[in-house]
Length: 213
Ligand SMILES: N[C@@H](CCC(=O)N[C@@H](CS)C(=O)NCC(=O)O)C(=O)O
Image (cartoon, rainbow, N blue to C red; front, side):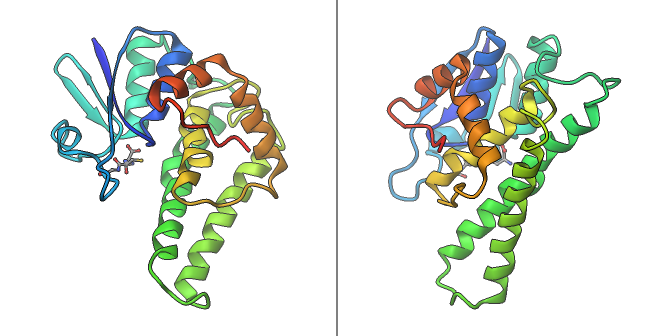
């Protein structure tokens, strides 16, 4: 049985959402963050040497890393649904935006958050450079969503499943504003109309309002 180990308020919400979109059987195990350091509790860290969410188990398979898990589930259980075939015209968009999320966007949001807590003066050049990088990263997404309803084109794909955490729940940790980005805001409204997204969020983090605005 595929088991999704979900750490509360974390990137593993992506995997719950993926399973709900694909409507595949899975078991959800929820873990609460350590109340003091806000990290994964010891029982989560014991699942995989990385000790970070998401983690899935599936028979003998124990896998971490969002992108790898998304690819694995789509290939093994999704019949390729929510991916884009290699010979499709929008395949380059699909792989670009899929990898953009954890390759560029999420690191930019993390570094910006860490530096904001480092007590640096506001004229610190590294602080400013990293804040500018996050703004450029958000702008790129907004520009793309001005061209298409979803990152890979007119249909939701796994690239969107990767992206949405970084635009929503990530803002509980780093509250960057989306107010100047109308295409992202319209996109998040579309996401918020999806029953699979709403049911995933209700199962993963009951009571936590998705930050869709
Ligand atoms: N690149 C990794 C990042 C994993 C990661 O940093 N997860 C965070 C949650 S969003 C985590 O587990 N933090 C708690 C901890 O490290 O103790 C992925 O996408 O799977």
